[in-house]
Length: 500
Image (cartoon, rainbow, N blue to C red; front, top):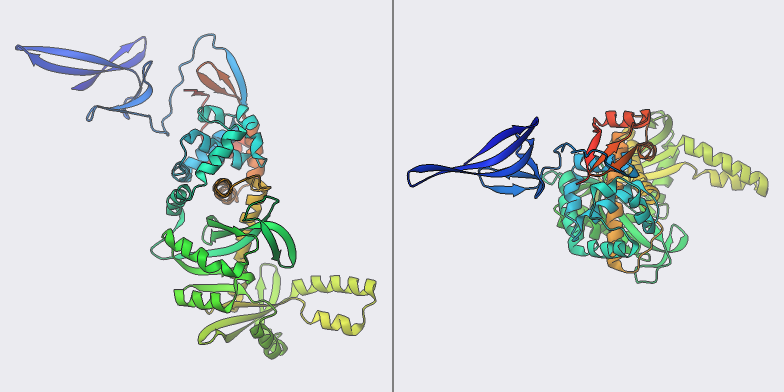
């Protein structure tokens, strides 16, 4: 059995040829495969099957690979059906495939995968409420990419509830962690939480007192990979659960996914004796800031502040200067640590200016001003590893990476406000927001050497339109800004694309 070819009217057609001997005579049967799209890969097109692959060795038919470029069959006098936003949906779809996120998204369990893929694009492209998704979908090239998607409001609620099941989230993170985790050597991570204020009446909404601010909220915990700045995992708890009680559970959940933590940079709210002891026992090194109410903080200030401003303690960080003194200490009984007493000169200057203005308005005495000035610009960082004095600030300030991830979530991925009625729906919403935040954060990193941000890049790409005709899409001319983005990512935009 073999594949034969005929050329008719300049078009190449393929056929399956089978020869067998019957009663001493050779009889050949032929079955048409249709038009040849890619002879090397074995891609064909026929009226009965559409575009497909055929393997002569196994006799198996299958779908064409996603990377295949399928030429469009244009009909004469084809009618123009639609004009759609093209560039942003086209770019994000290709970008997701390029960075390997497609496998993680497809691991999310839901019957209509077109709906999941389309909704992920919506979370990336549009920072607006989900009830606008159907309106967006009607005017974007995503409807050509995912023709079976249904983004009506009721269907989205069902989708979020389904993908928010624990088994679906686990499947996603198992696939996603393969993109990022270095399981053999362990992970360096940043862990922090943020509040999601809401008025939803279910058990997760509770009164939170976080840094003196009261609100009804859910606490969202993110783990960020230090090496890539990308979100690695998320958890959520009721708003009245304090951060200190969530650290161990977060690290254990990471371990359940096969991600061993070897080093963590933590918010000051996670530092307790119990957490520190558990981190020591688990062999996890960490860096954090020490709060002023700890006895160790007060003891370090009392003993080492007079000698802090020695010449040898002055270090630079970017364009700022600070005095840093490293002090070996005992964080919990029998556990060695290193405290870094610091005086940030820029912060002290800024705080002093505010203090002087407030003193003039409030007629503060000289003694009052003097007392308040003593603590200005002071801080104590704590590390379980010995770190050079000029390296502790750059290391600790990588915490800004997780703040940037929270900013991306809240400003770019439709995370807030929450509009859900069940925990499964909440989890599904947070999962898609997490997925979108990973895509946008990776895009932000890839755009760092250009003049673009993800926001203005996607806006520029949205202005690249396409026209939909019977059977194919014709892309319009792209403006220079959109073309520059395509070139930066080495994306070739074809003149036409098939609609099916």
